[in-house]
Length: 357
Ligand code: SF4
Image (spheres, rainbow, N blue to C red):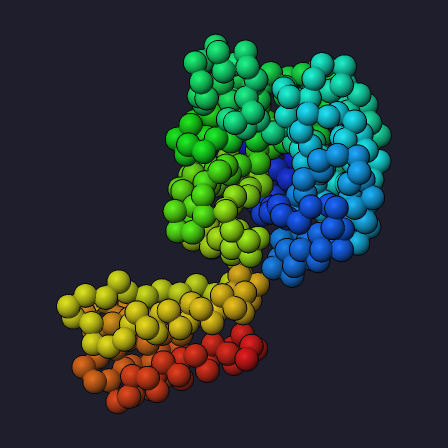
């Protein structure tokens, strides 16, 4: 697959060989600026430097200004229908604006946004085409929301911006259907080298949303079609950011972070692998494992695959009948008659190495 071109979003570079960039969207309205700033800073604490916010009307301009001034990451204003909000957001100093040119009114209004954007070379536009707000003409041409319609609308606007000499933009074409979204992104990359912002929109929450979002984003990351992405979940930003890092880690796209290897358990399992795993996962989530130095930890249930996986990890334990063997970097370090004591030892070593309590 051909590479995307590189664009700027404030201090960040997106596209080309740059690492896929995680984004999230705060849920606090700009009418409560202090709370919005707190939520954006929380995203930053979680390691997410790019935060989008809904900018709904002019009355929120002061709130947006405050957010931009108080935040050391990049703020993107999400705009619908009213092009004057895009102009106001650019004035406020946002790093990016996201809008769907198809629902902003006449092309004159899109042109006015482009003229203002050109004066801010570090500002990025996202052409955000969503299944739910697809152009009526496209909807009737394709008889509903289809990947062909998403791609056609995105490419139309990409060409429109480029013909007017504007190139610092990315494209997103999202629907709540994984296959439609993936097909649309593939087509867009075939026809354009603009970076892609990807995600599965309205994916839901909980395990359902996490799995659905991951199913689409993982394919797009694997095919180098995701220059930046958001795991859109009916959940808090912490869940979105954790899941985004988990996807990157699973695809070897995150250098740092703690990876847990554990077996699915079966009739051979000698002890409480599920309990040990759950304790480890909960604790490492609290410690934000994705921000910690790289470490692979294995918790395995028997002598079949246990020693092999435990040896392959940095730290590992393999359960045996009424015992456990503890490994570090492929070497047996200790044998325990008490499996709980082996788990406590493993957890202590993780604490020590990662310098966490
Ligand atoms: S490692 Fe052993 S206990 Fe775990 S699933 Fe494999 S065979 Fe079963």
